[in-house]
Image 1 (spheres, rainbow, N blue to C red):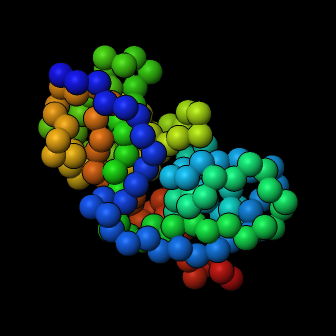
Image 2: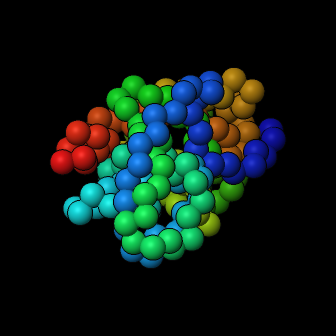
Length: 161
């Protein structure tokens, strides 16, 4: 059993990003790899705990830039595979058993990083499709390979009006 370092969300296997630029909403602060959604005005806004929608991943660190500044977002498309750290409020419970493959889990955000909450089932932001090969079922904070269900993905076409 090893304890892994909690990390940011990245694309699985070095897959190519899909960058598009969106205006940022007021007072937004985020780090590279955080999930972002578009608010009703089409402005990029950081996802919070139990978020139910996303357009993609932040590609730059942002610390409350001027509203409407264009920022790059790595747009997530249906079927895209991501790597996300598994989290639980009790570290010893932050495990990824083989039986979790295929199950949906929710988003948790801590210190400007997004994780899969292994104890949360209410919003289903992530669907586990596997575990990183170098991680084991007994590792603490392992990395899961996930997809985001289409119901949680904002349409690029709709977001651009």
